[in-house]
Length: 214
Image 1: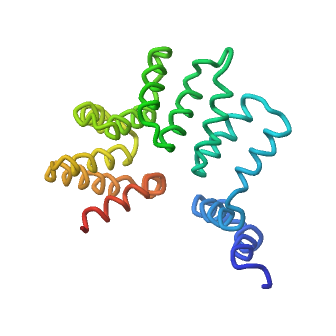
Image 2 (image 1 turned 90 degrees about the vertical axis):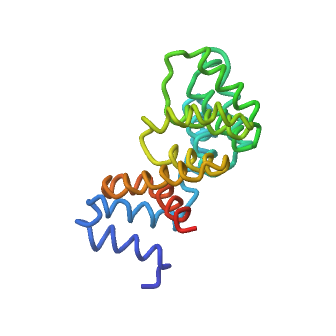
């Protein structure tokens, strides 16, 4: 009873409700509580592993955690260190660096990185990298190119994020009715997608609902 609220909640789930802890809802609750108690645990763990052994895998893991925390400059340094020797054109590291540079607002560099990624790895397929390319075109003012990429993404991207950014671009370009239709399709998918879909894509579904209430 003297534990902090979050710690007490974790104790309740793990010790007093073990059956609940084994369910998907229980695991989600545990992750939420852990994030409240120690929000930087994964970053600290990755940093410690990297300091112990500065391997390419540990560097990539730490860079990914830095991205998640919005520490883009630090992530970019690590990804650049990874892009050497045999890994000079590794698509995973090139995409990671592009994400970091996008976070820093270096849009021209991001486009160059993604163009080079595809040129060096023509068989590389990554919906998130494709989405980043569409977003950077929009950021650079290439509305025609961005619309083309978003239209392709809207037909296959596994989730709501691409459609949300597509609708926002349409809004910006004054294509209000078309934007509204894309927003409504996001909510329609959420209604039929089940709890797992909404757990994964809840952020974009909520943002869409806010847009439609305006």
